[in-house]
Length: 282
Image 1 (tube, rainbow, N blue to C red):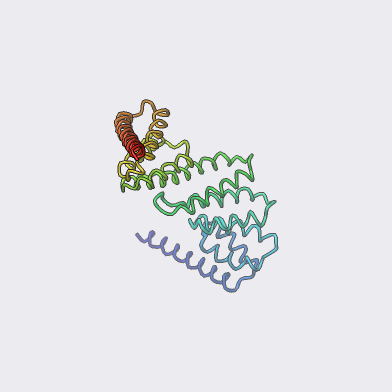
Image 2 (tube, one colour):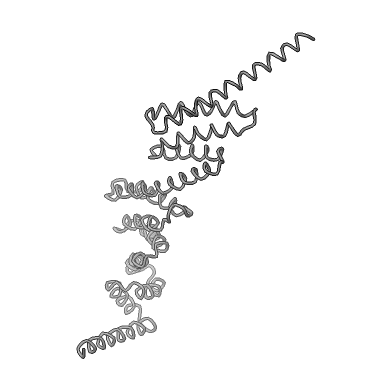
């Protein structure tokens, strides 16, 4: 027990001495002393205290060889502290300020990767996700032969899936709320934006079903057009998924739309014949 207590006391004394030395350098140290202490703290993964010294050195050592090294470590210090917003900013600034440096490619990638890590769950605002895709695409365009291009493509696929999932859930919400006009538009947008979506079969079926329901709830003057669009969307669905699990339900609904459409045409024909008859008796 005495040995453990003595060891703990020694550790406390060492930490206290280290803290005192850091505070002394931070407040009264020369630029060189702060630089050496910052490198030491960075190597020890004490990024919080290293950043305090880097903050003081950035202005002092501007336009020197050391400034470039500080800028690189500055960005990584925020990265290791999981402050991905600031890390992304400083990685990109490094790549802009030192376009010919050996680390420029790495920093441009890391800027995009930090935005990837910052991307929230699909149900939240996806502005950061869009920004991450934009930055990853910028990297692949700037360094098309980089070994990181494959990783960038994988990351972009993950982000696009998140955007697709958000749109898919929103379109389904419109459908459940019986807002069929909105659901048709939302589902259609998904097919245009994400043509390889794994939900394609269900989406085509729900577009058809939305048109069918939309037509049934419409006034007579709108029903003919919407039932016609329902039949068109049914044909598109069946042509792409002739053995779909939704086929039986879709076929039943198609027959209903067809009957209602035939009835509307018959009604229009009777009205037309009646008007012609009135004209002929004048």
